[in-house]
Amino acid sequence: MLAYLSQRLMSLAASLLVASAVIFITVEVAPGDPASYMLGLNAQPETLAALRAELGLDQGRLTRYLAWVGGMLRGDFGTSYTYRSPVSDMISERLWVSLPLAVFALILSTLMALPAGILAASRRGRSVDAGVMGATQLGIAIPNFWFAMLLVLLFAIKLRWLPSGGFPGWDNPALALKSLALPAIALALPQAAILARVLRSSLIDTLDADFMRTARAKGLSRGQALWRHGLRNALIPVLTIMGLQFSFLLAGAIIIEQVFYLPGLGRLIFQAITQRDLIVVESVVMLLVFAVIVVNFITDLAYTLVDPRLRRRA
Figure 1 (tube, rainbow, N blue to C red):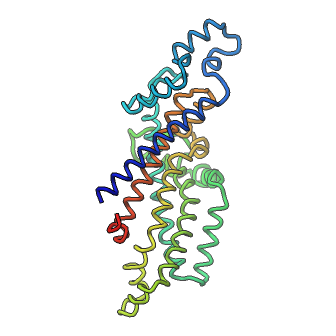
Figure 2: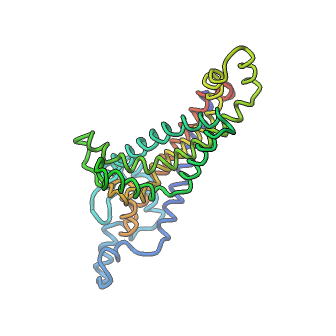
């Protein structure tokens, strides 16, 4: 097991190194100069050169890349070109919005998907199965920002139960969770539809396995065999999807954050791109890549907890 962990950690480090190089090169080759954007079209050449020197843009790309990676290893993400404040402070402020939103949405999607997938698999071929699959197909087909607008119209404008946007901070946790409720539901609905379909397919394959027939032959009812043996063996693809979903919910909520005016990482990276704040774009994208890789690493470890065969193999 220790050798398996060491191998996975080495793979994680190599993935982060390659990702940092790809992110830096991709952002650097994009057209536009941050200094020119900040000073405007009529800036004097000497003023432009002075600002480029102040921002460190006059150095070679390799030097800037090594300085950026070395700073991240020390926990220093640099200084924002536009706001002249530490990028780490900006990220930490926005992370306390995006991270709880992603966790909230993942919990909601799991709570919706597990009963739906289990119900559809246990009633395969019946009207309940058709109804659940039809609802999940609708959930996949409709974009989450449409769900967001419908939720705002119903719960914020008509019923006035929840706020339509903004974030008051965590000084009042109840109010903060209330502000994240609609964005979390809008993010969770499409993900719950995907997760429910994957769980149903995995459970159907498991229910037809030989060990399930053996469990039934030993006297277990269909429901007991499903809960004791079928569900655990069907969780491997479900865990994979949940890991991918958490990464998407953390990194891909840009549109939802714009709809609800949430000051999260998605909105920060959108603003940084429009302002050519390269150091913020690189650092936030790198942080999101790090989160994706770490979540996948944790998902791999969860496989060994669910399936003893993988644990013995590891």
